[in-house]
Length: 152
Image (cartoon, rainbow, N blue to C red; front, side):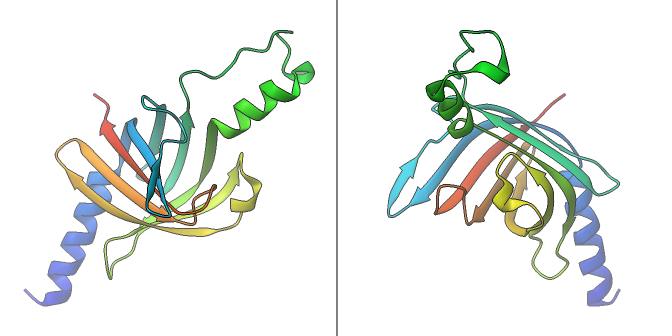
């Protein structure tokens, strides 16, 4: 086999391993030597990576407030602030870079509009049913990392 054959097999392996549904286990942002848990100590979320190259992710704090009015259109400033700061969702397309195995996310839409249209490069490592990704340019600055567990 040629080296390029081995590279193609490794790339296919990364795609196959990433494809599926993942539950958020941990998430943090490294910023100025500090570790910030934007979504709290026990975040919840889901990441879905389809084999056709589409993805969707949702990350949430477990302590998001309920709207006192029970109406998303009439929340208070504090309710809106807590929800925006404690949640994130995005969707788009994904692929694995054949040179270094990084996951490339093309964000088509996000609850953080500054990401819309971006191509983001995430380091990717998978061991068993655990996947770790990190991306620079976190929404609050710094480098965001997440650990996901494959759902059964």
